[in-house]
Amino acid sequence: MEFRDSPEEAAFRQGVRDFVDGSFDPRLVPEGWQQYPDPRDETEAELLREWRGALGERGWIAPHWPRDFGGAGLTAMEQFIFNEEMAKIRAPEVGGIGMNMVGPTLIRHGSEQQKETHLPRITSNRAIWCQGYSEPGAGSDLASLQTRAARDGDEYVLNGQKVWNTVGHKADWMLLLARTDPAAPKHRGITMFLLDMKTPGITTQPIVTAKETPGIVEWDINEVFFEDVRIPATNRVGEENQGWYYATTLLDLERSRIGASIALLQEVESLVEYVRAGQRGEQPLAEGQGRVRELTDAAIAAQVSRLMAYRVVSMLKRGDLPNYEASIKKLFTSETAQGVTRTAMKLIGLYGNLWRTSASAPLEGRIPYRYVAMVPTTIAGGTSEIQRNIISTRGLGLPRG
Image 1 (cartoon, rainbow, N blue to C red):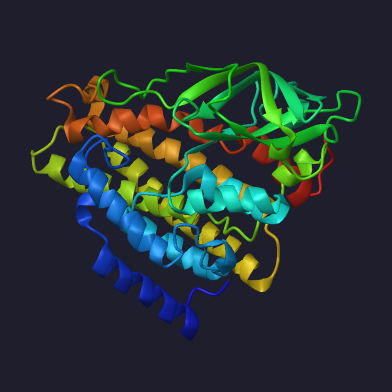
Image 2: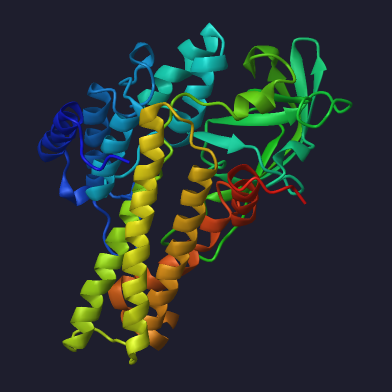
């Protein structure tokens, strides 16, 4: 594992830093409990538009896409450097599911019409996308999905339900998996579609989680129901019954999750500053040296997470494909993030019961907010149980069962 940049990589990193110095407005860094700029604030919304525009000029909204499709054609190592530098300044993410999932899928498997219609709208931020994969009985075992798409002439008729859908109530389009051949083995009877969310027969219902606060932060997770929804056959991605294989293939997308590691380091650093303020009597701080030792362990774990990211990207740089190594990184980082928030709650003691609506909440209530917000991290993107299965079978060579 090489920790030093090559001369070319060092030049690229400096170029990213120079770009940040000239284009990034520090007012885009959210304060307190906020994780993203507030789109209701006109100043923040304008700053975000300017930031997206600056990124778009360099193809950095979708840096891993080929240049022919509006991306920057970055290598895996360049993506890593770019993501690392963006994470260090806490730059808001742009592109979302459209950039990370839809674009790479269409570039590889979509029709020319689909590419011409959707790719420019993704890079220009003119379309919001959501994902229609998980179902009540098909989460970790996604291939068991039952939402049915039956062919009817030049259309498919869709019936079923999706769950844990992010921003479906705001999205323009959904990248959808549905079963088109119920008689086929479960992995082989699934087809991928592009679904216009304005199509009649679609209903969304909110799933309100613990982190939502009425009047401050609305929900972003939904259930989505389909009743005789008609999808044009031209919105099918690739061949019928090949959707499972399309869903598991992406372009050379950097998968080190370095941003999560940097966020961990930043969280630990902010807690260290909080403890120092508490020791000076400037912030409420629970008694006990055990809490400080836990914070020390968290600092070590955050650095380990960063090194795991370097291991994954080093493999990509050599042309190797990270498999269980990426699962180790995801598992360790998500569980460490939860541990850091537990330590933070212990540091503030009973003040952890104060939500962000209380004027007495330390750090504007960020600690209890992060505590509840971190719960899904060991579920989303592959549960910890699934990650452990991958590590045991593919990494250790142990039998299934």
